[in-house]
Image (cartoon, rainbow, N blue to C red; front, top):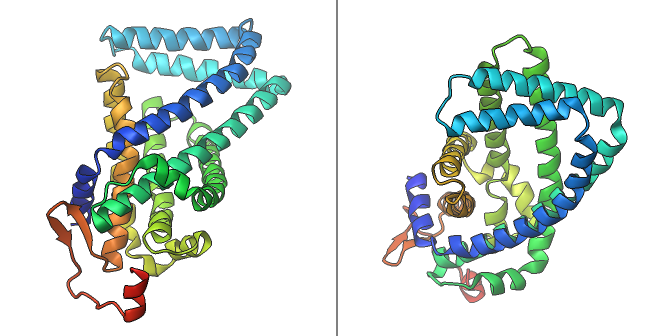
Length: 319
């Protein structure tokens, strides 16, 4: 039922997709320009390294054959890519200076980019909440500016936590699958990598699912909402994990299909729509857990089974 409500809310807020798209395009364009200024000099210094040439050649061969419809040699290409990538990592381990400087620059850029993406997610969440609470079409930019202080605090806390969690998970997955299970077939390794990644993303989202709705809809402070999201009061944990695990697979499949079937053009819709899909579920799930009425379309309001009458103080505060 909550999934159904989330889909209805997503459809009702579909116009936010284009506003979030413009915002993300601006952030990604600036981040891409800066990252190219960091990556290109690093790649120029690698162009004379045989392992790097072998890696680029293996990737190009795989893409060329895939575009021609020949998928018979995928295992061979994956093996070549893995071997050349390992050789390149060994070389960089022996010459760490350029790698460390470039990685530090890209890491800092990623943190800054994620900070601005977090601001956009907060603004989109506020617009969705206004539509669910009053069926009001709040402007994206003015909502972002109005909530900039709280959105910045949320993003400052969320981004480092997410970055550290992701980094630890990637290291653990690499060590587990490509070191501990090194003799396993490559396709099985890739399958397990994606499977464990889905599980880890589901665990992360399960615990932070109610953080943003508790701030925006629940009027809690950023730190209070963070603590609330980890408590049992925030609702059924397994139900959230099940949703986010399946949604991760769905989003991955839709975006990969959009990448190959539309030559990347479809990503302009599927990427911001993926953000909104998760946000709509978060707010619908929070409202259902806390018995809060909300619109799922212009004529339909979802109500709790037993409505609680607002006290005089709550009525005067507009709650």
